[in-house]
Length: 34
Image 1 (spheres, rainbow, N blue to C red):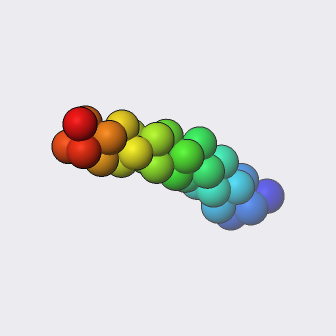
Image 2: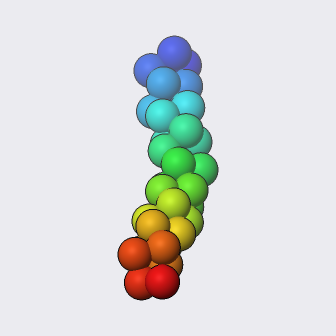
Image 3: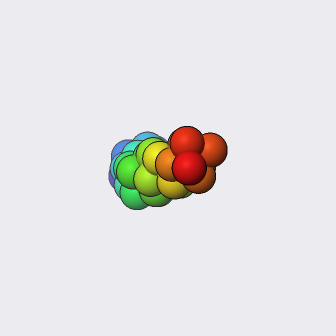
């Protein structure tokens, strides 16, 4: 069970980070474009 919890937690933490990183990159590109 412990091993199963580790990957799940890792995926959960990475999932929310991905969209945030994309938004941050979008904001940076917009700033550079302006």
